Image (tube, rainbow, N blue to C red; front, side):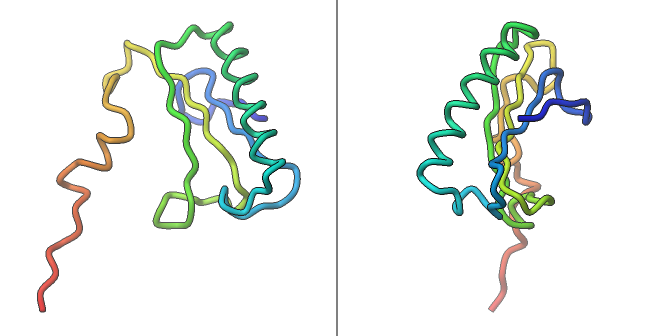
Length: 106
């Protein structure tokens, strides 16, 4: 588990397996179970200290998916009502028309 100031909302954390796994898809069944337990524990600890109003939980996989560190890690990001983009979630970036690929021509 890791928490730190990286320009993300206060209380943000990452959970990663001890064994090297390149992506979430490489985790063993036991690692999935452990990750879920750690995710819940971190959520409870962060909630007690920061009282967020929402959460984002996610994995970036591959360079196009946003992965820049090639060791699987789960992001736990507390969200706050006072944030300028509160309530938009990841769908905001996924559905943004600016994120559409250019039309293909044949």
